[in-house]
Amino acid sequence: MKISVVSPGGNITYEDVIASITQKTSKSDTVNNSGAFARALNTTTVAEGTATAKSYKDIFIEASRKYGVSYDLLTAMAQQESGFNPEAVSRTGAMGIMQIMPETAKGLGLEHPFDAYENIMAGAKYISQKLKEFNGNVEKALAAYNAGSSVVKNYGGVPPYGETQSYVRNIKAIMKRGADVPYANYISRDASKEEVEADLKKLLSQMPDTEEYRVLRNTLAEMNYL
Image 1 (tube, helix red, strand yellow):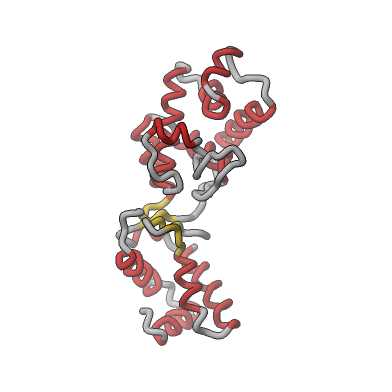
Image 2: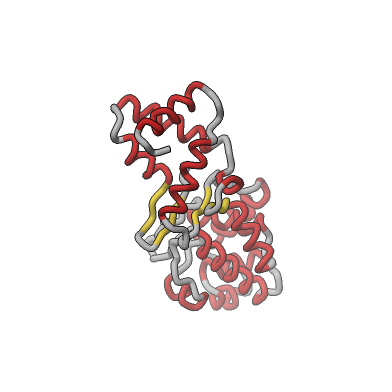
């Protein structure tokens, strides 16, 4: 599980924080602690108990409501475009979770394409424009998102391009079965390092009361992290 932390200085993850901490322990302890931490994260939704986190699911719900695009369509697009990877870059230069091209990003006012929240919102805005342009026709809108509106208009529908046809077909299939939205949480790029660390400490202190997690909590406490 990856929890993205986007800050003006770059991208870090909660795992990176833990890695820096556990480097002070033995190699075997590091492996055990890392595994325990990962399992602890998977037992709770960070966004429900912290001040700076927002779940990916909630971002897509917000984008869906704001731009009038179905949650299923947006999450299916994200899975097809990048596998929900906020740092993804295609061979043609498309960026982020929704794989937005640089020129398109400018037109959408997307200033931070690798910020998960901003990228998802921009992608939702863009597909909403395409849906409006093609009178709600999902296949045409998706084809336009992938290959451009002019191409769709020239062919009167999904163009005979293997990539675009596969793109539309795959997204429809994902929509039918439901996208595999990752169990991950986005941290606002406006959150300070102190706020993120405070949330991390809170999360660690609330780990399940099992022997495995008690060992991890005690280890972190001995290192003066908690």
